[in-house]
Structure formats: structure tokens, C-alpha cells
Amino acid sequence: MSVYDKLTALNIELPATAAPAAAYVMAVQTGNTVFLSGHLAKKDGKVWVGQFGKNITTEEGKLAARGIAIDLLATLQSACGGDLNRVTRIVKLMSLVNSTGDFTEQHLVTNGASELIGELFGEQGKHARSAFGVAQIPMGACVEIEMIAEIRPA
View 1: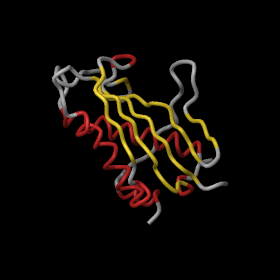
View 2: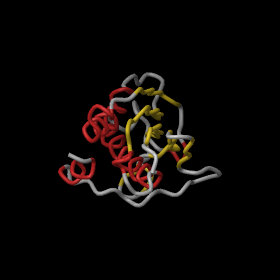
View 3: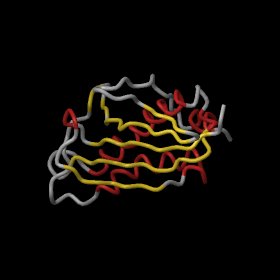
View 4: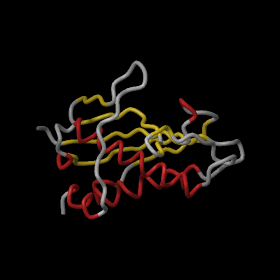
């Protein structure tokens, strides 16, 4: 089953590719490796503001991270010339979780993205990962995730 069949089965429609919010680009390719810039969590079309351990739960965070994975896939699709079937491997996710000093479930929040990627790409979706708790993220977002992927040449 292709990635697109799985997206359809999960009732996921990829959004338009996000635009950068500052002086950077959304994706850079070198060789067969694509580096995707960090994407912020969104809720109702706006940055999902919150801090774990203060005013947002781990379960809400998993949903936020899942939403970021969907946005990352839209950017990756654009970087692949419109064809996610060119992806041969999701190499790594790095997750920044806006959290208080005593919140320790950053890894569980990030699972929202990792689980979806695994479901969509199977064996090729098993990736390395880092999940960090940070004091703040741009615009007060609750989560930011970046991705590294390997693709087949066009």
C-alpha cells in the first residue's frame, strides 16, 4: 500500500506547504538527504500556544505532534517534487517541547509524530529521534519538530 493509500485510509489530507516565518527555507536537499526546518504545532489554523506542566496535557501534546507530522509530510512532499513515494527512509525527528522544569514526558508528546510516521512508512519510517524540553519556542508554540529524510533521485 502506498503512502497515499495510507493517508486516504486515515482520512488525512496534506495541507499546503507552510511558509517560513523568518530568514530560512522550509527544506534543503543535499544528495539524497532532505532536511526539513522545524514546524510549529497548530490548532484551528493558528500556532498552538502552551507549556507542558503548566496549561497543556501530554495527550494534547501527542495530538499537536501528530499535526506537525502531517505538516512536515506536506513540506517533504514538496521537496520530493510532489511524490512521497520517493521517500526511502525517515532518518530522524527532533522535537522541542515547551515545558516547565518538572515536566518529563517530552518523549511521550513526540510519540504523536513518531507513531504516525511509522504507520505511514512502515519499516522505512523507523527513525532515530531526540525529544528535548525547552523553556520556550518561537511564538509560544507548545511543540516544534524537524525531520531528516532520504529520498530516491527523481
